[in-house]
Amino acid sequence: MNLKRVVDLENILVVLIGIIIVLAMQYTEVLQSANAVFAGILAMITVKYTEITRKILEDNTKSRKISFITKQLEELYYPLLDFLKEYREVLYAAKWGKVQENSNNNPRKLQYLGDRDNSHDGCVIITDLIRKKYLFKEKETKVFFTIFVEGGHCTNHISSDVSFRTYDELKRLVEEDIHALEVKLRALTA
Image: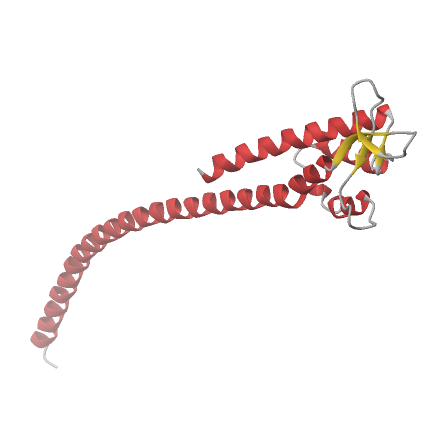
């Protein structure tokens, strides 16, 4: 090969390398600009998906709360209050052995009047509620429920003062819990 040709090839190669370097530098600047734009777009998309995900989680949490409160009311509180309302104040007339409505001058007695067509004791109904004690809203209500059931106060005929106080307090607590749960449910569904 001739020396002039080698020099020309070297010059051409140097020029090509120079052009490649210049193009690479310009291409890098364009590429960096494009990367910056794409990074900005990606950041906006990420923020939007984060908001959507947060909203989905809030809705799921709200839905779970509504479901649990509904379960508390329908499976425990309403049936328990209905059970407690089945107790009626009565007086056993000793002379005739009949149940009469209690008057103010007679000692207080409560009789469970539910399940009149069946031979079941009223406490048979409460066994379903015992399994659902975990649904109680307040610990105090659960304690009085346990005392009422396990302390021998849950009978067909309530006549002791301790049993009356336990019954009255349990009924009051159940009514308060129902009211609080219904208020909370209305707030969640509004």
